[in-house]
Image (cartoon, rainbow, N blue to C red):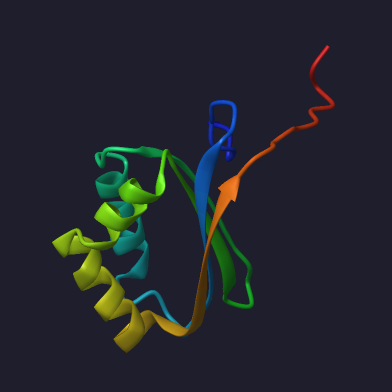
Length: 113
């Protein structure tokens, strides 16, 4: 099974943190989420993604980008704009987006020797 953690270079880089509460039912959401990750991974500056959603519908997706210009370009991709519009109309009851520059990053892995 692949790691749920994005493989990232040493900072600095940027993170877009998308926190959301879903409406009930899939309504095509899973397929669109997969399509958006595939599309984002083709964009210049994209570095990886980590995503989790609880049974209560609350989820967080962190996407990682080389620079702010890459984030702005992704925001303008036509298929991404369409997915955002559909998300507001159908899939989300609430969401928040935060963009930050990662200056420092570290990890722990008990399985490392």
